[in-house]
Image 1 (cartoon, rainbow, N blue to C red):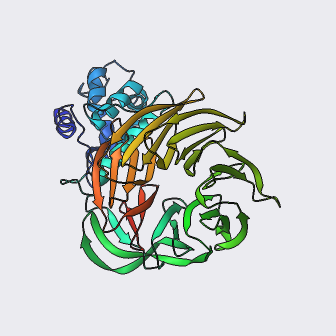
Image 2 (cartoon, rainbow, N blue to C red; image 1 turned 180 degrees about the vertical axis):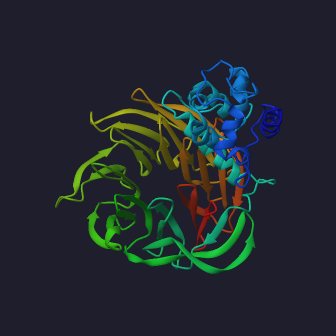
Image 3 (cartoon, rainbow, N blue to C red; image 1 turned 90 degrees about the horizontal axis):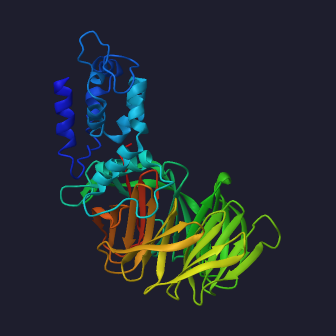
Length: 451
């Protein structure tokens, strides 16, 4: 028992900034066999705070409950969530202590940072901690680089101009759509593999992925992509949104014609939202002959970014404002004036994260029907923040300064890794830990955890 306690304490460190195990090493490796763990416990179902009735009196649960939870705090989140409940009922209760998860999260982000950036009353703390630990294990290198265990590959040449938008979908980052200034939309299978390996900063590099086909062409640059329930939408400078049926291999499902270049898209259960250069946000229902359901104007200049849910639309305009529109009440709730304009936006839980034209990251809370500024951060970008992805335990950003950065979503963000690209980065997409970026050299780079 003393060896188990000593090993856990050694792995966990001194209680300061986290020392999360790497992808190939985990404290759970030493207790993976449940039978061995049960021997350490002694009793199957003792009550918290009571000694274990094991015959030798040295079971894990013979220790004071505070010491048991202290030991557990140094185990990986995955072990707390998935392993301990299978050992015994009491150890399963370790994962029900919300204060312990909050302490773990604060240890992960380190001193001087707060987590979450906004209200945490609806946050799934165990899931957030699990995601942060997985992000750390994959992306924190000794010199700020991605660990070699990450698989990196480039999609074969499929466009003849800069790739401006990229979108992962299909579950586990299996499929990818790309939109380019060559006016085409391409569909890729990332599960296909190609031969030829080489070394590269940020992991092993190879050619990978297979071009499933070019879905079709716009008559202007393809600027944005969105997917929902097997239907892909592409918006372009030709003032149209084209729809593609992924279930039939990318067959055309129609064209929605607008009055201005389409800059940003968002699928919602009741329709497709499009932000355009004519200052408007349009709601479309592709199932009816006249798809335009409604058009609203909440900005005095082009709509550059938007996110939404079933109740609200949050949008960023070139007029240096971010607006909250209530879809049910059909009215503008509030509008915040910034010192820059927002080019990229991500919405998760009660938080909105956005990147501006000056290299800064902004975060807002959507709480009690109002949009409030939480903070503004310098994460090291020196030019346009062209892409951003936020989830409860991760934050990815990319910029025309030729970098991609991976952070913990604290305030301020804790940067784990900086990846450098030979050309400006135009956008990114993240799904199930897979990262894809679109860049100005007609290329799409992909990083993913080991398969």
